[in-house]
Image (cartoon, rainbow, N blue to C red; front, side, top):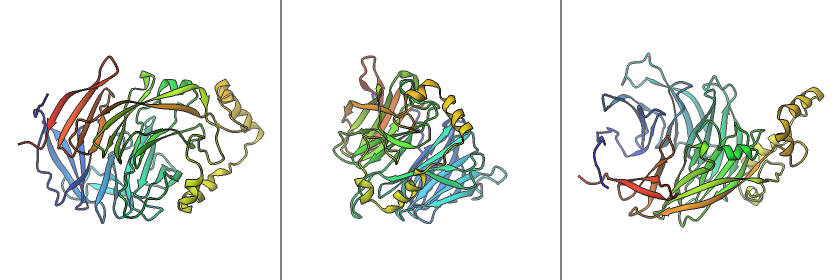
Length: 397
């Protein structure tokens, strides 16, 4: 089925190619980032998109842009080839299209002096904000504000590591981050021992995708790895729908294939952890030795924790109940789960490399696009297979 109805084409007025686009939670606001170093913000009104403001965000190409959740104000995050991550907050007292409506509020630079290429936000209970950043050389960093009510204040690094051996400078790379954005994780994972407030993060790592979760101490560990791609994985998307009983993750690859995976929690197995908080199915520390010492220094600083007093230890031991006690792998080790990833669909209908993939808010519709200039949409049938139900050729007149 091919349809061009209900699609709006308009002049975006950037001076160079648009490299990233993102919508807010409700789909009523859109932000575009360009190689001209500028960001444009649009509001949807009366079935049309109206320009709200244009501002210079970086001193180089802007490679990714994201809206934060709507509960902390109208905040945009950007990363650019200048090696900086920046936060911008809207000031509604400024006139539209004045160039001053979005104010700079926070900035951090890449620890490895290699530019960031991807970012994503995660909100918990409408009060907590987390940011994941990935550099072009595969260095992953997760940031948390010291005060969650003040995103313009100080932030600290809650976790960082190299995802793989540092690629060669001339090698094409792909590192994309995607949080699970639903309020709670999959219920079967919670039943297996996963903390209800755990962070879940998918990261493309060249031709694979690594899945990380946090334990009760908010330390990340790897639970699974998605393979089968024959070239770089350009994008990854995590579907909502925690009540279905398993997680669904889709990937877009340079080899032209759309792949869909199911992630099932194993209620009868848990991970044996090491002193750095990595699961036994994660990579060995050999990768850490090959990587820059930046990641190692941060981890060593978090390795030693302050011992609790007798009262504090008693309170901590009683608050978790029997589930915490069953989850202990050793003295003081938090519960960690093991999950199995299965590829349930591999689709190759695009004529060329895939670049983007995204699920709908309900998690039952999937959209993909690539070099062929078409947008394909997919739905899961009753038999568990994903079938195409619409195609839009954006390259045609």
